[in-house]
Picture 1 (cartoon, helix red, strand yellow):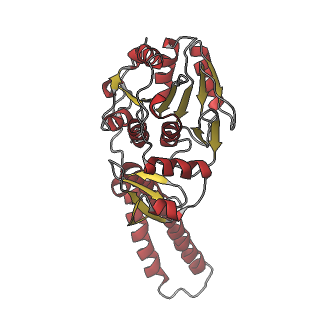
Picture 2: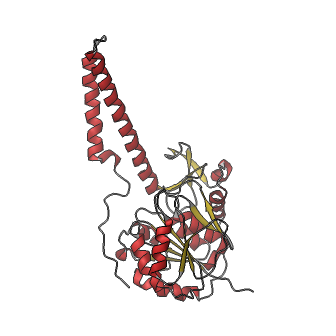
Picture 3: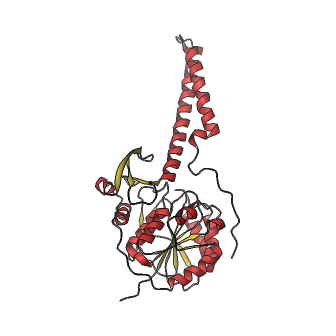
Length: 339
């Protein structure tokens, strides 16, 4: 039987650049595995900056991933901005699929695709970040027999992501300064026994890869719930096999409960700002009409009513109480120990 080569998938968000800069120098040049990195970034970011920084930090070759290219051991592949990165047996897939957990690139699609394609050969790593992208991907890797690792939350600048992924029962939780040695050891150990790929994991990987609306596929994953997708307005299904509350719409958007609340908060705030602008424009128009001698019966009362609503909305926006982000207070930053 041919030797099954290991693959390493890494996901990170807030604080990720520093964590990766401490990890990469620890890895030997002859590392016998490719490394795939998803760093949350804006659509306007330049992944080349991250790739260049990591190239300078360590001895491994580092590049922005290209759709269809064959991956090789000893190279770090960075997901491009505004695209998901996934892998199959030998090549990389770059897609403009729907956002998952509010991000593109997102961590879960990469982890899930690796788990389906490589099973127990996968080593997943969740580093510092807010909310919980990477948790379901970690569960998928574990379900398919892979090895799961998180940065010790106490060592993370933003502990939310590794702490959430830890709830899936990970194999290792270590500070960044110990992660390189651990990865080097694990990639040189033969993978465990192959496991049957759970059907739900396979279906979700296919949805992300094909970038298709597929109501029948999503219906097979769970039950409809009385919420709408805040990204596209479509109905949502709750994923039954998930260990955490998680939702999908038929166009491909996927949310954990935390990311769904956060996205709803953003949409509510956008709506309130639009409403505030329209009310102010209506008030100003009524005043202008009165100033130009147009009929103004009751306009003073309408202006006063509008100003009451304007003030109420302004107070909501200023306080943020009704639209607070689901992540709650920002965690206190901690210093990552240099290697």
